[in-house]
Image 1 (tube, rainbow over the protein chains, first blue to last red):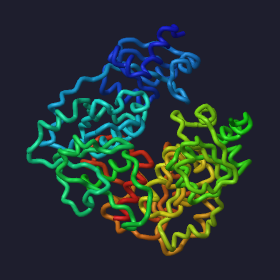
Image 2 (cartoon, one colour):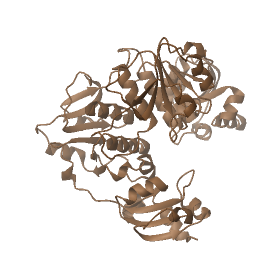
Image 3 (cartoon, rainbow over the protein chains, first blue to last red):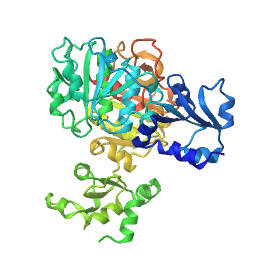
Image 4 (cartoon, chains in turn orange, purple):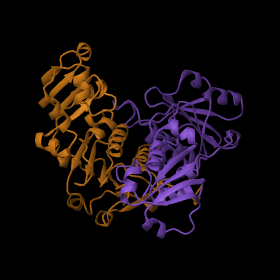
Length: 249
Length: 249
């Protein structure tokens, strides 16, 4: 049986405050935990014996056998799985997210954990290795984000940085800085680069003016039929997906 | 002040059982309620005086002034808005969803309300008027789905029907039945029709074998770079978006 303190610690990682204090995050479920184990250092795993039986060596500092009740108490999910793991947060070098060499995705204030998780998942699908986030972007280690990545968080590096300062460094460099705008150019008629930056804005407010100032090419995903009265916009994860697919086709 | 019964009634519409019993659904927030008012019959609106002041004639059977406390009690949202409305569920004719004349989107068991809502929103963006759902697909009038459509539910008709029986009717007709599969053909090398059916499967299990049997063209969204080790799949709403964008480009 787990101690009350162990359960309390795991559950506390729902909040950014405690994640930052311990520099850890949690992942739940067999597939996700296995994906994370391949990429991150594990501090603690609690699991049912049935899960342990399916594993070989489990590289973790601490491994605790849990019963149904323990898992239910510690889990942040509606439908708890057989395993919950606590990982160290990774440290990445922002210099590796160099848009002269690759496409880099940027979040200017995306707020919804599900949206960011979905974007991390599709970045992985489309071979985008780095996502650079403004400091007010939702935390990639929010458990809802982690779960929504479906394991892609193990392959995509998410950086948090003063976005204006970061993008300022690259001003005047020889790559485009794309942004998604409702008054941009049709993505199907633009020649799209395989290096540079693609900026996606906040769900409600889009890209901030201070960041927009750096954009060299505004892009727009045309609706169909053109000029038909329609919803005003697409969800940010959906727009990111359509853009990435078009850049990578 | 609202009565306990009024609040209880509104909150009960979170559950399909009560939505079906009353044949109603709820929407919250200024933009969403206004979009819905343009399309559906309103049975009841509760709103703050400040909201009412911004409206002209409000076409609803019953209109109740609510204070902050009433709204907070009746709302299903984390951040309650100024208005909550109850609408009659619309009745649509499945015969209008004729794939000989248009692209029809099909859900074979999509379960997540957010995913379905996002798909309704992007269907609207891409001019797809009808979505035909298997009976086990999540309810389009689930409040989470309604909110995720961002108003698109007013423009897109969502049908629920025995999917196998429905698709059986169209067997051998002169339009393609597309399905999204991980072993399908590259969407970028297929000639895509502007009539027919696009089937999207359940989040975990994909398209059922009984439905797969009707598929004439299996489609696949290529990852990048090709054959790189990556996440196994894309979220169903993301895959739907990329497919619809490609059909409509």
